[in-house]
Image 1 (cartoon, one colour):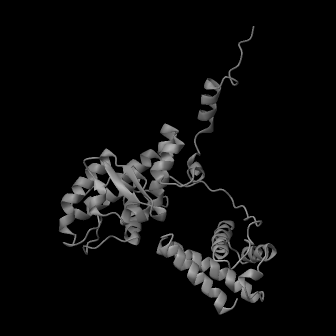
Image 2 (cartoon, helix red, strand yellow):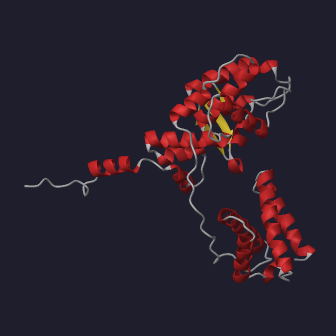
Image 3 (cartoon, helix red, strand yellow):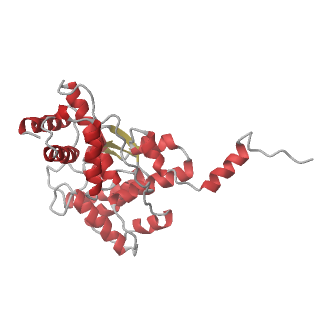
Length: 302
């Protein structure tokens, strides 16, 4: 793939950042996946994007598989390429999308992990006094109470939590805003943290959560604090920030069975993304069906 053709990757990434306003990390992933395709094209003596067809794409995916890439990684690469080719069609570089008829390999479906309610309660039972204890209690409670993504939590500013209304204003993926309820335990922890916060925060810092240096707390620091408290509370399983979101969704669905409501709270664009959390007790669902569906009810024997 010659340098002039590779420039289209740069233009596409700029389009993602400026027009679609995707995050820097997302743009980085797109660039990595498209560079992989461009490198394969160069090795296969394909010098232009218009020279690609569906058979080439299948060969590229097969080469990725032989290199040991997982089905999920190959799916992501194909998705990135499909979006890139749509952009090239818009820019009249291509006449058709060479990836349209190519199916991604199916990987094993893996249910998201979660902590049961008792283990979560033990994890959240942080004892100790001082601003760092108050901050960590508020972080863990808010992650579980509102099902926030890690980036959503670290991006929060002071004005985005409304204690009176018991809500938090979140900017999620694709800069989509949503308002999420905050539970009473999280509210109590947040009030305690907001009283302690001036002891750590710099005067001009707008971040809700700050480090002991007074600046916005990083994602890596939150991950480290979550692991620290899991160890402290004697929880052996791998605990990470997104596990709170999985547990939030699972526990809500188990009690409410309201898939649409949980979709709104999580900020999922497609309900199919939320459906991964519907690993509910099948026997319980079967009992509801047998009890309520007209065709399921057995006629009494004479």
